[in-house]
Image (cartoon, rainbow, N blue to C red; front, side):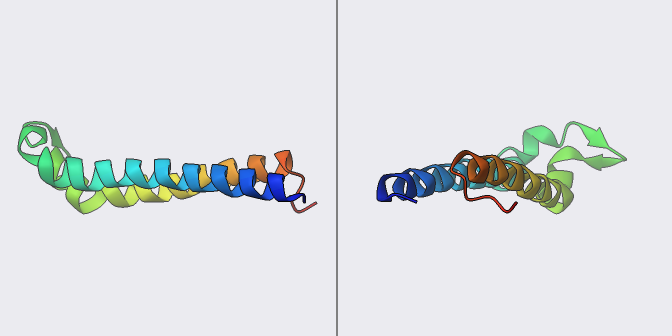
Length: 85
């Protein structure tokens, strides 16, 4: 792969990582800590929503973000012709 393509590939890869980790941070820190009191007015399964995000929600979001990252990287690999065929 030419040098220009390598730089563009890694630039987009890092952008994907930054966006997905930012989403995870906002969900785990924001919903689990910062906005917990206001979210606790909503109940899920008898538990306050803020508590749920702190205990379960951030883990679920992280797993979903892993699958999103895999899909993004598969399409990026195909675009730059470095996919596994």
